[in-house]
Amino acid sequence: MERTMTMDESTRRLRASGEAPVGRGGVVLGRYRLERRLGAGGHGVVWLGFDERLEREVAVKVVPREAGDPAQARAIREARVAARLNHPGIVSLYELGEDDEAVYLVSELVPGRTLAELIQAGAVSDRDVARIGVALCDALSHAHARGVIHRDVKPPNVIVVTDPAAGAGFAKLADFGVAHLAVADPLTGTGDVVGTLAYMAPEQAEGERATEAADVYALGLTLYEAWSGVNPVRGATPAATVRSLGQRLPSLGEQRPDLPREVLGWVDSAVGPEPARRPRLASLRAALADVAPRLPDTRGLADAETARRVGLTTTTRSRPPEQTAEERERSGAGGGATAVASRAGAGLAAGVLVLAGLTALGPAPRFSAVAAAAAAGLIVAILPRVGWLACAGAFLGWLGWELRDGTALVVLSALAPVPMLLPYAGRSWSLPALAPLLGAIALGPAYLAVAGSASTPARRLALGATGFLWTAVAELLTSNTLLLGPPPDAAARSVWAGSPSTAGREALAPLATSPAVAGVALWAALAALLPVLVRRRSAALDIAGAAAWGALLIAGHEILSRAAHGGLAHGGGRGLVFGSLLGALAALAASRTGLLRRLPPPPRRTPHVPTMAR
Image 1 (cartoon, helix red, strand yellow):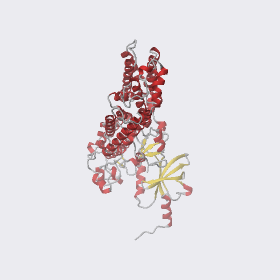
Image 2 (spheres, rainbow, N blue to C red; image 1 turned 135 degrees about the horizontal axis):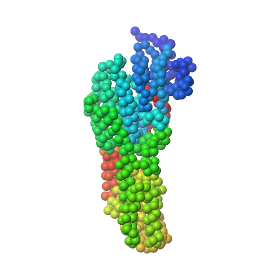
Image 3 (cartoon, rainbow, N blue to C red; image 1 turned 90 degrees about the horizontal axis):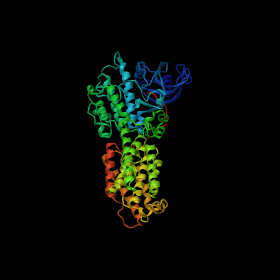
Image 4 (cartoon, rainbow, N blue to C red; image 1 turned 90 degrees about the vertical axis):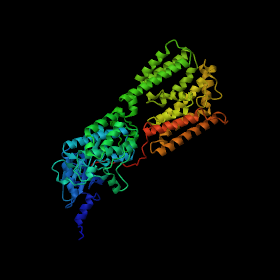
């Protein structure tokens, strides 16, 4: 017979659902004032509460009281499990209480965003994912040591906190409502199938008693999704998802071939169908902690704009200095073998530049050019920015004062913009020299593939612009065609070499007024555009993007060439076709292997609200 709902029961349900105040005057358990509803989930409604006794904000989950309702049993179980746990990576439960209307779980309020929200917004970097994985390994290890199996690890149950420096950890595991105790838990015996299907271990889906390996499986899927943006188990329908359970999943390497092999191996092992072959949490944690400093950190939570966009505005301030690329450059902090290689590369490039300048731009110096180049390389390797500026100043001084040569002014016009356009990228200040070097072998446009792989749009713009500028200045110095050739009205170096004023009038002025100087903007734009068109979506789309980018490169140079040569038919630039083709192929290869950093998908903007266990 259909059950008739009384007025009291209707009011109770309305209140518990969040549509009406709960308790007298909105205060429950005599101390918690419910201020506003945060959301619903986990068979209850979550409220932002204020503890009037201790004067602090809390999160209150309200589970309506109804005889036989399994949600009540789940709430009591969640409290019983949470009472065993005390860890910075787990949302803390303060109190379990009840009255005639509902059962209340009073928890720590965790301002932040769930990992699911951050993945959807494209707001986590590869390094962020590794750090979150480390935090979850620690949290689960703590739970397992106390006989607790979570059974529902998934991105919506992981909270990345707003201010990890406050002692709250970096990420927290929430919602132990379907957890079970390894011993004496009559509510979760063999045959129970609880959890979320798309993250459920195969043995768990078959009704076997969940073990620690089930949590490892779910954690592996969480990391897989955070790094790739897809859950390989989830199908278009629940039936399709069920069919995926127990199957060997596609390797993470198919989605992210750019990730280190050890990361791919550990994640693939974690999501294996056989529980006994999954790694232990300690081993997985060690692997994630080891690889985290070597993973890219761009466009993640360390980026101030990204943090503001998703409401984690204090995360950037709370991170240690080594977590952001620009702060690493400012402090000179390294980060292992990558930093050593980066400094060595910067020193080598600077040394080669000094050696080339000393041997090619003037008479033989009265000192050893090789020794001077070696000293310059060592200085730049130790102090990338200060050393580069010191070496550039010394070289210009040698050109300008010892030789009384107008060449110094022309070289200065190429060197001076670099520190201003790349203020925090001192290890890249010699990189634009690659553009004229490639131009000497008729491959100049291929340099843009290098500039386009820089970590930020500003650096891509700067490297593209300075690469074209250095090529143009090299053409003035050598009177050779490396790309578009010297301006038609520019004099040969022999005319202006003896006087800085003549160099300004006969070399720099024609260059500055030539239509070809628009190539600075063209190269800057093409370098910035490259990772937008070639962004590791699919092979077909990346090939189409690389082809479009190459076509833009060729068309832009054709226009510049015709403008620079009075509209006459012209070849468009030395090595334009082969250089553009090589650049497009290099960009495509870099994208598919991860050297060209992929851009996140367009974010869905969501309002910032504190989050707790749901």
